[in-house]
Image (tube, rainbow, N blue to C red; front, side, top):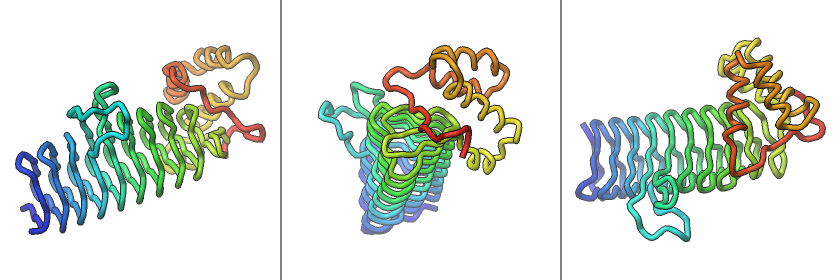
Length: 268
């Protein structure tokens, strides 16, 4: 059975699932869908054409589905889709997409958004992603599954962060960060692979060795980057994780790659 605080404002047309809890002074717009078992604690605003998956926990003063922060936006009915089992802490903001972009901002399942973090218009955030406090993902940014973004870091518009990557605190990601990498510095530089993160997620020692081998082959071997990518693709064609790195690089169009800092080895 759903519980709605008497001070909450739910517009006609909004759809709430089973066992939803809406706390004091929350506002829910007419084009919003809230999944089963969600808990909106208090002072939460959900607007736009927004859909929130089951069992989300949303803390006070979060603003979801607000208009995109884009000068090109003219009030079109764009959307925000959030997956199931997400935790969205205080003052988190997520914008809808733009008509000239993807039309929707997308967030996967089991994500954790710490206080004051932001997901910009038309962004794509994978599943099991963690944003620490005050992380900002710019418009059209892409973050792969299981990525971890450290506090106060910023993902520049159109930049990509690959799956299982870790971004250190205060890093400006203005270049694409390949899957499984660890990026540090004022402007993102690679400091090796995210070995500790991969171990914690159950990657086998052999899988981690192959990720390290692919990283070294692509970034630290002889020849040009294009030559090293093709060489790694041939040498490690049978390894799914190595090929994810190769495919990520091949798919890049908008931005250059983050590359290793001078003192970086194969892992941290």
